[in-house]
Length: 125
Image (tube, rainbow, N blue to C red; front, side):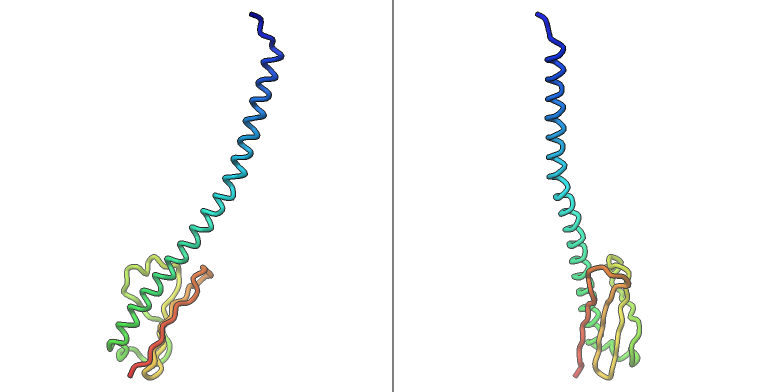
């Protein structure tokens, strides 16, 4: 049996072209999926961090409303939280504003992070 080298060469060429087209289609399908996974990951992280900030602010506001507010001076000042989960928040600060019997506790990020500012206010009786 005689094998024609030209036929073998053209078969290899078609196989290589098929491989290149298949890889191109795969790349075109994978890039949008990779971008979607990345953007959803950032969205999930921001949602988690916002929920965490709300939980901490709510808990600290309950402590303040229960009577701790009396030890805080009038005006606006930084507020130190005791929650270990605050380490999972992006860089930011808690700020307590006391005006008479009105308390306002807010957390805001130092840099834009997609979370926004979390604020709780209460007027004590």
